[in-house]
Image (cartoon, rainbow, N blue to C red; front, side, top):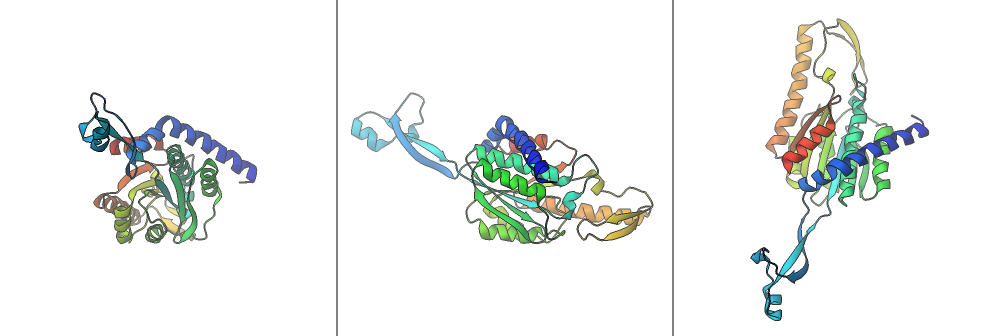
Length: 288
């Protein structure tokens, strides 16, 4: 898309995502992801109904009347978005590419973090790290992430979740909120996921198209492998080919869900023609 179309698309996503974060997700995000702890703010006179465990006995003794300590949540957190930009993100049989849905979800999460004064960073990955946007605050920073997601062209069309998690662990030292947006058609990332889930509040969002889950019976069909870019002729009338495809696909998804659940990480499954708003809200309400 040209620069005019890009700006228009960024603006459309900004308006939609900010409306969602202002009206729905800002509060749910705050309730779900707590701050690093409580910090002392001030003391005030004890009032009926206050928790007596909060009484500041030193100040109480000095003024000969009860005072309590007031604490505030140390809110500032970092949201990291790990976004799979490999070739399969351009798959679509419905009205939208997976890439567009991923961008809208990422934007909604980012504006929800911004509303709560959290920093936002992004790692765009394929089978290597394509782009690292360090955590920062501000509307301009969020719009840059959206713009990159819409126009970014990866150097590779393959996927390596393991390398993206290892990179995340090397560049983000403190506890952070981490969302991985991918179709999770990958394997051999169990060790790095375990380490990341221990260190971060981790959630995997699987975005997929229903047509990816099985091959329809259409005879010989030319297909381009989104990961390898190779053109192959597939006999879709072959029951064995259809079963092998389904088995391989289901194996990857079962591994994704099993690994995340086993390590205490969150899981969201979202088809491109489903409402990601309902999916995210349901997840946040369950977590809060």
